[in-house]
Structure formats: C-alpha cells, structure tokens
Length: 286
Image (cartoon, rainbow, N blue to C red):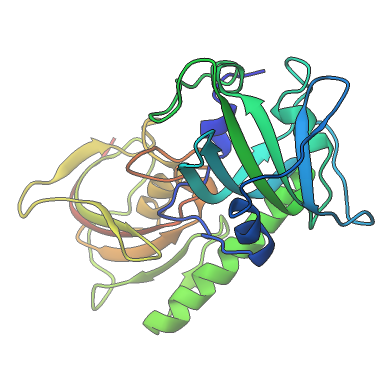
C-alpha cells in the first residue's frame, strides 16, 4: 500500500466543502466519553449510528467529515476528506476503524499517534508528542466504490462548471474531450492552425472556478514550448490544437485533463478545475 494515501485523497481547505454537521460538532465538545475496546485494541465510541446505512469494503472511497484532536483536545485538522480504504496495516488501525462505519454515522476513534502517522508516511504534527494518542472524530457522508466515486466527482464538477458559466454569462462550446471554450478574438485569425509537434509562444492566465489565480504570464514574457510535450497538462495541449496563431481563447479544463485527483499541492489542490486564458503570439511549424 502506498504510504502517501492521505495526501493522495485529501481535499485541502481551499477547495474542501468545509463541514459543520451538528452531530460531529457536538462530538468534539464531549470531554469524557467511555471508549469501547475491540479485540484488536481499537478504541472507539459512537455518538450516532445509522445501523441500516451503507457500509463499505476494502477499495471503497469514504467521504469523511474529520476533526483530529490531540490528547489535550487541541484541534489539529477540521475539514472534509476522501480516503481509500485498504486492508488493515496493523491491528486496530485507521482502516479497521473505517470498516466500522455506516453512511450517516458519527464516531470517535482513539489511535496511537506514532503508528497512525508513521504507517501512512507522515511526521507527527506539531502539538503531538511521541507516545501519545490522537482522537479522530469522524462523520461519514458517503461510501462509494472507485467507479461510483469517479462518476460522482465528475457530476459534481459539471454542476460547479455550469454554475460558474451561468454566473459569468459566458457562451461556450464543448469539445469532444469535455473542455468548454470560446474564442475571445473578434474573428478567426489568418494564422496557421496549431498541430501536435509545433512550437508556440503564448501568454496565459489560469485560475480556479473560485477565481483564485494560480499563475499568469508577465507582460511580454511569453511561454515557449512544443505542443504535445508530455510535461504539459492534456487540457492545455487540446486547447492549443483548437487554435490558430494570433488567436486568444478561454477554456474550462476539467480536473481529469488538468492536474487530476492529486493536483499539485500546495499550489493546485486535488480535483481542481482550471479556467485557462491563452493568446498565441507565434507558431513555429514542425
């Protein structure tokens, strides 16, 4: 199992659906609860359980509203995260805890901090001493297999894209790959059509659907590269092949054609949809 599972599936604060579920909020205020100890040594307490709710299996993706506190009840993390469930690494670990959850449950799991962080490729966070426990307050929003989760994430992304377009009152056309784009130049330029293998000089701006600028070129400082270079995101390559020299477009690039599920932290969070504005200043044919 990869050691970077936490970072792979985390949704950083900048794009997370920050949650304030009443049951979970009441959980973190509880100072003294009686923990049940499983045969494996896992210690837990359920504040609310949906016994008829959906449960999951190894390989499923869990959407959790998570609050992590140290043993002194200082908050270390409070956000919504996605986790893929694996087979337990050691008895009573986090993945065993996931196996206890139904959709709709809220629970506290108390785990040895050293094992929890070390077995998942993370250092002890500030505020946690070696040998101490951490408290994981979990509210389970949904459990899906990877295919269901991919469909769900794509549907949610499309809703956000459509809401963004409606808010901006843009008139975009949709490419066969899922990119939505429109020409910003008054007419189709007479420049050459761009093809894979051509070299281009462009100015650009790209930002999120929340209109947070990720990066932009400086005035007169053009980005020069070969179209189809595998180091560039697929959405950029596709957008350029829709263009001619001298043209300017804007395009909305789905996360699957941008930086994917993992993003490029800390600059680009996972599952980030990109809005890209490009102007082609020069095309050097292959």
